[in-house]
Image (cartoon, rainbow, N blue to C red; front, side, top):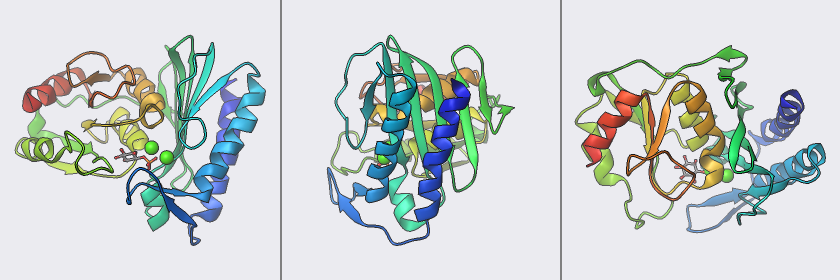
Length: 252
Ligand code: IPD
Ligand code: CA
Ligand code: CA
């Protein structure tokens, strides 16, 4: 099953790669800076058609064409392009994010960047991998040696808009990046590149695959109340256990 899913995602990734350096047809969604391109929709439809055939009884929770939750034994949670603004501007931090849930538990997480050729995969209980090599979160214990990642909502007026959180964290760490793809931010945290990552107002398709990848890399993903994150609209905080506790302290 894992290989078959991987193959389908690689094929979908080729569509993103082919169009990456071309002009895109862009429309906006929730706000004037929330973009969507024809490729987002095309990739999503491709994935639904092909993944649906693998498990005929499965359902979809997908950003562009199925954004309402459906209860199902097998549920695919899909972001066809995470990092659409990057895609539009040809900044190569874009990916496809696919999670598969069984009875509400994520059993697989796939995040594929077809431009940088990085494929992150986790299977529940079997570890997390980047291009076939096992990955782990960093062992850093001090915020002062951390490179953090974060993101900001498309609606600047959303509460919180992360500005004061960014400001507070800045005082404690080596640096903060805003790469523009929540799924890859989680994967880079899983690989120990970022020592921590937080963000508010994420959608399930931004984080479902990445959360499993961090957990399988021995990391933790909590909400801003310090509980395990269950794809709700609460803020997300990730990293190793010690760093996550320290991040929660900073945000208190
Ligand atoms: C966005 C990216 C971004 C995050 C936003 C997401 P999209 O997804 O993950 O990093 O800050 O919250 O909505 O729109 O590119 O699929
Ligand atoms: Ca997204
Ligand atoms: Ca998207």
